[in-house]
Image: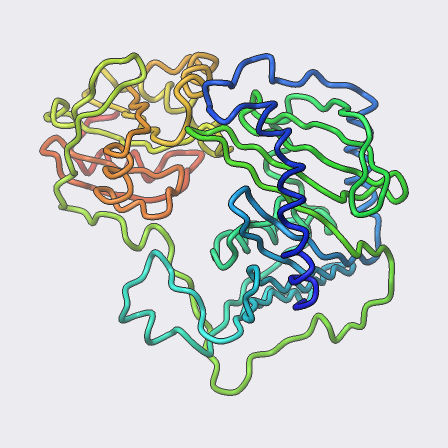
Length: 424
């Protein structure tokens, strides 16, 4: 790994220069987003994408190294081994770091452990960290095709840059973004990792997210991926692949690990552990609304409030918004206010999404520092988790708070009834 990281140091600047065409094409400001960026599907290009997924899923084993980087010159390296039916080994380290994190899948469970001390979590205090900083591991079940290696790595926050292409695709997992593909088109040919590649552009969620894939003509697997996420500012990341090897023999012992004597299993705290507790005064705010006006939380005193923190790019948020609109229309005459809060997205993208989904309940669309401070500090959303929910009673007190969403809204409705609302 050390040699590969040193090689990356030499080549990083050259690679980043080559990425400048992406900055030119989409612009450095979200104001450059426009509907013409939404890709119309080309069957031949879509077939290349499908062939890439099929090739990965049909392989008996696959190994490769990937380097993920951004325009700031930082990079994270991943060495990945995959073997059917459900085995994997991922070692990751940041550029020039001597310490790495290891993720092992033994067929039934995922084991995650660190070389040296584990990183500090945004959801814990210094005392709990000191007690569990070393000689700990995480263990989780890994049902075939129903877990994401990429999500597990990203949740732990050990790498500067997470992987773009999910290794769990190998085991049959379907990317959560797959239902939101607008279209796929060809961008010609180019070389990557000394391979002649077909380049395709994949547009997701009305071009809020775009990925460019360099797919090898020889083995139909990716050699480079460029991802552009259009939020308030454009976020750009590149994943480059090397040492791609199909169907080689991988010793079974690579996928075996057990905790050394004296090690303890650690449960990583989550966003819910630090949210405001019931009975706490909900922080007031005065921020910009979706229609250009002003929304002040205290103006809704006397009503039950469901504060819903969301982002266009989140699949659960996208699925929930139409249901929230139905609830708003059903209960608004009984004193319920569903109040959306988005401090992440470009206003043009967010308004377009709201218009397409006929969302009329009040929403804050404000990406100012003051708005982010309300969410990150006031409402203790330290990592920008979405969706995030707060139920606030008529006196302005928190009744319940949680992350995620439920199809039947049982928790929210129970909390609203607890807040004194008559919803029957």
